[in-house]
Length: 396
View 1 (tube, one colour):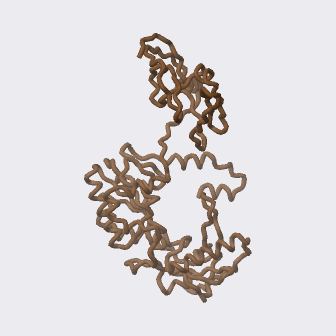
View 2 (view 1 turned 90 degrees about the vertical axis):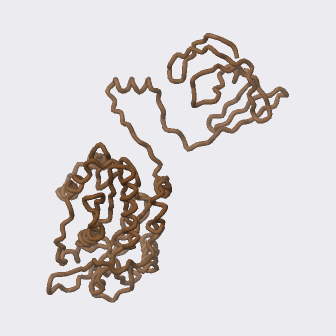
View 3 (view 1 turned 90 degrees about the horizontal axis):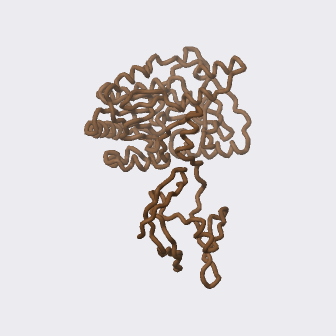
């Protein structure tokens, strides 16, 4: 190693004083050795940076598109080296460029990046969660057990059955309908029906492009006596979190399907399709009293722990504590309760043992509660309504 004094401009535009050089270091490319003079520089992200002089000296040919290069050897042949292919990098700018943009009035955002695909695997590695694998199955095991609460559909006296004829579907949707009906039948959630009631079936496209089967129960809802059970105010729920610093959010897997419909009211859930009429044995989505009924069930199940370390809102559960040791105890109590009541969570949608979680459209942390930025962004990007009906949709 030799002593030198050289000023070098870094890729970030900074001037660095280099005072050490390693002359004629052997650089191995496959089984070939190439000498190179290396300057000692504080670039921890790179093992070696080959300069233009060395590239020119060895007749290096770069192919940026294919991410490879060839370097000539003594016998006139060349050695080809393939680089690592990636899906492309995000645009990166220097810290100096960032400062310039900020001085120009540009807006900057600090983002915490997390790989969403790894959320489930991270949760499954938590010791307390590992003790309850049966609480997080890949699919619901079948019909739920009889519970202290069952879903009833009480209609106004003298109401006649409401039946809406089905409408034409495209071949693609018919194919998807057949697949989803078969899945619901095999899992025991629906059965063939001869009821005089009948609702429409429609599909709604999910964010991932798949189709969600929906039943249009609006006509049934109009003649249903409304459940007076009040859902809790969200701000009242959040008042309980004062002093909490550790949080776990548990999302039930198809929560409504974990509660049976009262046998005498099953015929009212009937929906009509080209492939026949079917009725739900479990509580379907879209019925007016479904949220209140499920809220009643969850409050009864977790009554001993409410306002102590648990918040429930329909099928979402939040466990909170002031310390790590408390949290382990509380989380185990909640998971044991779910096991005993045969309620099942969806691990990929859970957030376990974190200092910050998203719950009921808000970001909850030890530093307070704020609205989820995604909700604000959705409102900002909402197109200006031009019709009265659009205003109503926006306000809803």
